[in-house]
Length: 350
Figure 1: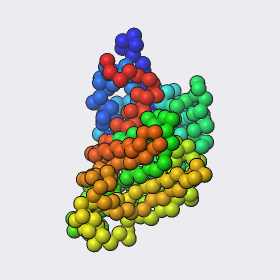
Figure 2: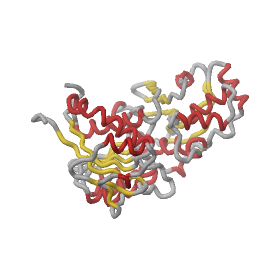
Figure 3: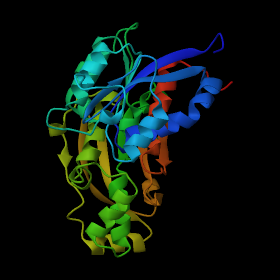
Figure 4: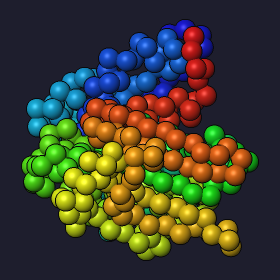
């Protein structure tokens, strides 16, 4: 290890598509992370629904990823501790950083919420792909990470995969956002495209599942709640407006007639599930999620093949448009790596 190399001991909770893919990526990018960013990442603990495994000397992340790809749990690891839960792992492990990727739970945010609370309270930085903790307790978690010398909280992977949606505030510093349109649910993009091409809903959903982008509970995607979660996080983190799900009007895509899809595409546009924030004269925002017919002149109508994107209108920067075409969960993994680099202030290149 060179004199300017920084070792980062991390925990990963949640080993589904995102967590497993992240381990696979890190297992082949360790040297690149060290060379380019001066970061030596060492995984000391992992947890899935079966429990947790911990080894302060480090786990073989390629072996953990292979185990999960084979459909097995961390209970098959030699370091598995049947007395250790994911929350206890976050509390007791000697680690610097938590990577949180448990499934979204909108009822009470668990287990992700308590895992993140515990990590932040014990001084560990937290990078989230999971949305439940942010949707239900953004203010609390932000307060735990608000001190200048305290732990960092990052979550760009929770809002649109690789799109820097949650980072938009710093890019538009000094500007006032007047209107934001977010197409940040890849599942509905794929389903609506497939249905416009003549496929039935179930066939279209199966294609999105084949791509590995569907929530464990598909209703979160198709009924608009995943997009609503992301709009809530965007409102809190970027617009600076304390927001809950109950503040939004939410409509999913089940009621979109196939003829409306075909007509939109034939006209050179498309139908997308859009999260919309519009600034009001009092400085607040109206927030809603629902299917919108986008004409051919709209920047988001140019999205295709499951692309996600956003258009933001601000008083100083005018119109800002971003789009991203991702391969399954890999974009979210890239966003989590981006957050790690951001936390540790590593140089952009060496």
